[in-house]
Image 1 (spheres, helix red, strand yellow):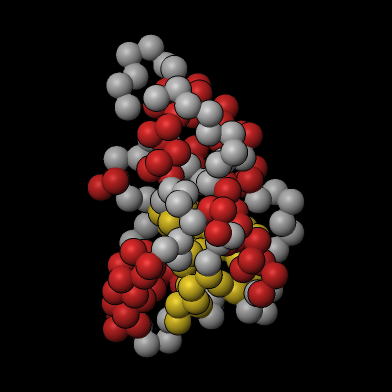
Image 2 (image 1 turned 60 degrees about the vertical axis):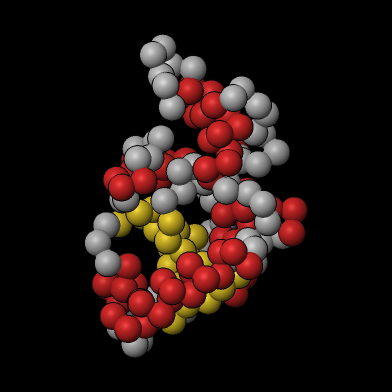
Length: 164
């Protein structure tokens, strides 16, 4: 069985992420969407909230699992006997950073390959950071994220005293 890991903070998961997951699910037997603990990014949603939102978003994809992880990605990939890491590339500006990550992962473990997938061009501008910014400013994010994420953003950002 060919398993791949699609890692990210997914804070929150977007339609661009889902497009990459769907593409990977067609190419590989099993995709693990690995929600990373990265407190350095100061996530809007907790690790468990991000996992729950991702689970709902991919519920229609039978060969996609959602898990959380922390630590080195290469260790996680090897522990799950995955053949590669999947990374999405939206634009040329993503490539340099993603290329550095892929080379570092290869240096840490030469058996870990990286596969780059591009989402639909209609998602090439989309990022979780932009979605959160639009939501904070009370804009409509429904074209960019699954319905459960729209509701979660509304709920989180309308909470009394919330400054995010």
